[in-house]
Image 1 (cartoon, rainbow, N blue to C red):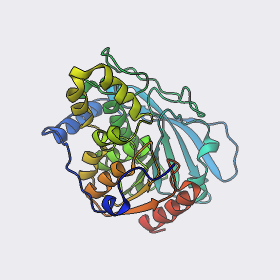
Image 2 (cartoon, helix red, strand yellow):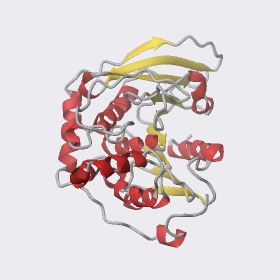
Image 3 (tube, helix red, strand yellow):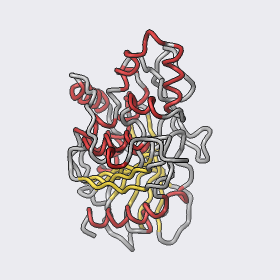
Length: 325
C-alpha cells in the first residue's frame, strides 16, 4: 500500500478545526450521570485457568442503562506482585474478550489488566464476546455498528459504549489488591477511540495508550478512505442523502478529536502512515488536539497493524515510566 494521505511534514503541522457541538461537555456529563444512577455492582467470578504466575477472573459491572457488561480480569499472582497497577483495555472493531490466554503480556510485565467486552460485538471475530446490546434505535442503519442510531446523538451506539468504558475504569478502581491510584486505559483501532473517551471522562485515570485510533475526524476519514468501518458511513450517506449533515453531526459527539481536547492525562499515541483503515491525518488530528502531555510513535511503512509487537514492547516501557516502576 503506497502512502496515500497528506505528506508527513503536513501531518506534523496540520491542526484542523474541531467540530465540537456546543453542548458536547454537558451531553457527556449528563450521559455519565444517567449511567451512574445504576449501582455499579461489580461482580467477580472464578475463571477456570490454572497458571502458576497469573490469576484470572470473569468480571461484570453495570454499564449504560444498567446493562451488565462483561470483562476479563487478569493480574500477576499475589505472591509475585502485591498491588499492581491496572490497565483497562478496549477492543478493536468486532472483537470480543475471548480467552484469558490472549491477554497474558501485561500480567507477565507486572500489571493487572481488565479487558472490557464491547457490547454487541465479538460474534464474527476470532475472539468471542459475551455482552449483548439491549439499547438501540429502530432508525435505519448499515450493517455494522458505526451507523446504529446515527440520526440522534442520544441514541447512537457509541454513546452506550463510551459510557460502558467509563464504568469499566470505575470497576477497576473498585477492586481489592490492586493500586487504584495507577490506572491506565489502552486500546487499538476502535479500542483507541474508546480509550480517548475514557481518558477524557473517566476517573481515576493516570494515562492512556491510543494506538491507530478509529472514530477520529470521521468527516475527514470518509474523504480519504473507502475501507471499513468508515465504508459503513459512506454507504449510509449514499442512500440517506437528506440526512447527511444530521448523521455527521451525531458523529461529532463521538469524534475522538473532540474527546482528545478534553483529556489531560499523559498519552502514548501511535500512527501508521500507510493505514487506510484509520487514515494518518485523522490520528494526527486527535494527537494535535490532545490536551495533556503526549508522545506519538510513527510507523512510516506500516498499515493498520501499526507497530505490532514492537510497539507492544515500547508500550510496556512507557507504562513502567508512567507508573514509576
